[in-house]
Length: 113
Length: 135
Image (cartoon, rainbow over all chains, first blue to last red; front, side, top):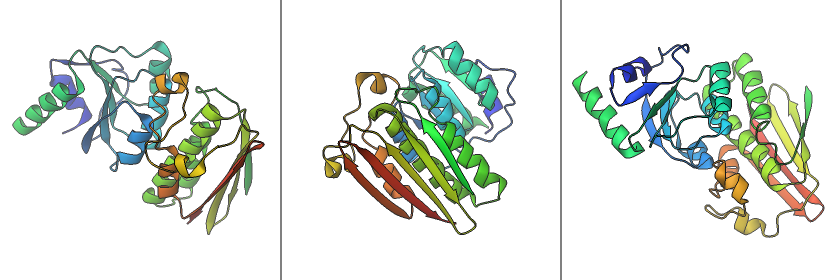
């Protein structure tokens, strides 16, 4: 599954359509604590699901070579976050669903591929 | 080569600058991805620690073909109980830091687990963290 496949999931919308979406998705990880993300994400091209609306999420995404960030539970990333994501070419998505529900939806979609 | 950076207190916007610099430096020199990852994690956590806990400080990076040595030093207030700070889940982070996703109590444990050599000295005059990576 690739990041661009997230576009086909109705509940998830892309916030940064101008950023290339060609990366593969190696894994999913959900957390709102940055050090927890830093310590536990083992694979590059992981997609992070979070409610943390902070520019530091983009710094972590760059350092860990994340494939994308999905903001869950209706959280809309701020202008600062979007600007930094564009600068660093980290694709951002948003959904009204919780991180747990979103993982289920992605997993179900992937099983159909 | 030696590189020196100033770190401003409570400037979360700037946090990540040094770790991004080091990541780029090592990536450009074709250092293995696994090492780059460990260096990125440790440097980011250390940078964040100075930003959210200290009155400000600096970072000095010594880099040669065999070794990467990074020293973070700040001007206080110091870590009261280093043993507690080294244990996973212990945090004294402020509400401001927590609202920005920090304060999991994983900073120093993540640093120690990522580097090859680790030393931390602290008093009320400041904290000096030295981390070394074999390249």
